[in-house]
Length: 264
Image 1 (tube, rainbow, N blue to C red):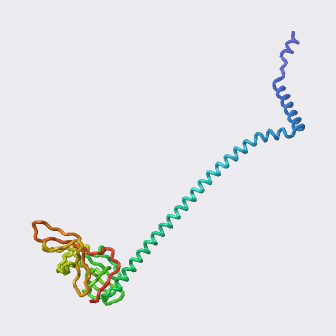
Image 2: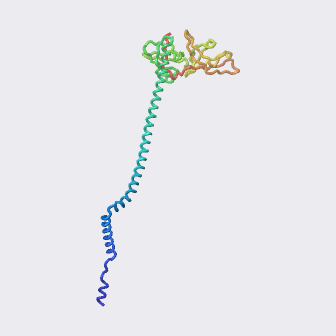
Image 3: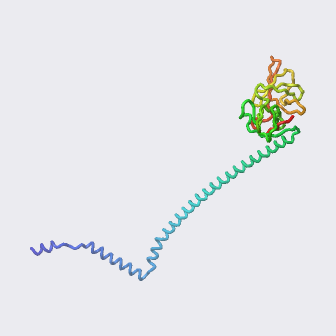
């Protein structure tokens, strides 16, 4: 009885571990044997696994390459587009500057080749930058005097010099407020006394029966007739025996660049 109890209490060996060990040995032996007998077997296995991986890698690479190439091309096109826009803007500015030079050259030729004897001066302070419808002219040399007449492009009589300095002269426009200037109506040679209203504008009151059209203009009297103002509008009523005529310079006095100072 005592012997049986000792035999039963003896620990049993781990059969599962032994089986796993035996299976591992068998697997290793099998692998070695297969690799000896058929070396291409494992190569085929590796190839069957690696080819899909390489294909996937190549597809991903190509996709990213196309994406980056597209973004790079897009950035290049944007940069090129901006450069072309800048060049077009610069070309337009140069063209405008060229047009200004052509107009200025034509103006200077008209002033310099006029039959009136005088000098050409550059306007350095326009009528909108000086008080009381006046502007300042830079003279090429000394010699201007108070009272000399000043004309603009298209031989428009503008006003007179009221102040002379070393190399500049201040000109007062005939359109200055309340300044009265004698003129002649172009169509009928009727004398008119224009009254300045400021800003290059005039007014005159005439008998209602005097025929004045919208295309008439007033001339500055003298040996040579200069245009003084053109008719803008006419205001009249049935009850009044007079009508009011509104006139203005036929040029923009706020854009004057060059004028002619007459010696007569």
